Each structure stands twice: as structure tokens, then as C-alpha cells.
Image (cartoon, rainbow, N blue to C red; front, side, top):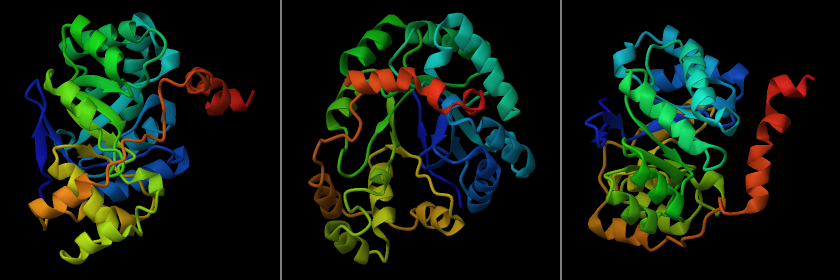
Length: 290
């Protein structure tokens, strides 16, 4: 099965459905990514802060799929912010992933010297180390300010996006830059009764599809890239099996009405900012051993 793609603002094609490895342990990551690629996924999303880039790289080297057919995304973490540190961290990510280039590189959080980070990413892009660059968790003025002041416009913005929070306002804002939206937590991280919601069940019954499949199909039909995460092979397969049906205009409108506009994570929260700035101290396996 050939996965549908979208075209980024620099002409790069990106799969519209991928596999995310957030909270997948380093020990499990290689197995999970191998199973995901075996299922048919070609987009794999990781990050420096997940501490599992090496697991992704090991799976890529063993999967038997040509590197040119895979689309690898990673993100520069706050502790690597700034032009020089970010540049070194990009090379380190390339080493861990075992690849000569990264398909999409994002600034992970809007904290620290993310302007310096983005400049390092622009340089990596021009040098062929990266095929496309973008942002993650940037909202409103921070997104606009960076996009207006950088030479390379963000190709992708990754935000919390799901049927309960469909990011209409941000989608309108980033459209001026031809930036594409990528959804983290596309299944609402399993909350808000998404797997039992009667509205999704009713829609799914018309196509013999699960709530999760309907929710993912809705996002991809809206042109939003989705990266569901699971460590179970059968769920990987189920999440991937959404290309054999199309939601009707009426069903799309039903799901649009499910939007509450409420996010689970507020990136304007100073408590969250402090937590993320201290993340390495708390969760880096190396630091925890000290």
C-alpha cells in the first residue's frame, strides 16, 4: 500500500500518516519501529528528548527498506538551544539515526535560544543535512515572529491536534506561510472517551471502522499529518488501515462539530515552561544515574 503524501512549501513530499515514538523506551524502540515499518509506515517521528534516536536508527538499518523511501523526523531539544550547541546536536542526531540526512527537523519547544537553534537548522538545510525544517509547539506571536524573521519559512508546525482540538485558528495563521500542520497526540492521548465516543462510533459504523481509524482519517482528510503512537503491532496495523475509505462531507462536518478548542497542554503556562527547561535534569537517563 502506498501512503498518501502532502507537498511541503519547499517541494518535499511528506507522508500524511506516520508512527510516533514519544514515550517508547529506548529498549523497545527498535522493535516497535521495525514493526511499524513492516506494517507500512514510512514516516517515523522521534526527538532528541525521547532518548530513542539510536533505536530508530537501528531499526532503519535493519528494516530492508531503502533510506530514500523513509521519512525521518527529529527535534532539537531546549538543552541544545543556540546556534553552536544546536549545530553539534544535529550532527549527533545524524550519528544516532545512522543517516546522512534528516527529512524534517523541528525546534521542539518555544523556550531557550530557539532563534539560534533555527539559524543552525537553516545552515544544516542549506548544507544538505536536512531536507525540511520547522517548529513544534509554537503558538500565535512566537510562530509569526520567527517565521517573519527567518529566511527559510517553517515547512511544518507540529501541535497537539485531534478531533477535540482541531487547531482552526492556528491553521488559518500558518496558511500565510504555506506551513503544514502535523498532529501530535492525534488520538487525544486516549482521553476524553475518544475510543468510545458515540459520535465517532456512529460514523465508523458506516464504514466498518473503529473510532481511532475515523479520528485519524478525519485529520489526514483535512491535510494534517498524524503520528499515532502505540507499542502494539495490531494497533499499528489498525491505525494504518485508513486508506480504503473516504468520509462523506456530512460525516466530516459531524466531526468538525466535536471541536472544543481546548488543549491539554498550555505552552503559555510558566509552570510548564519551568518544567520543560528542567526536563533534562529530571529525565535524562545519564543524569538519573548520577
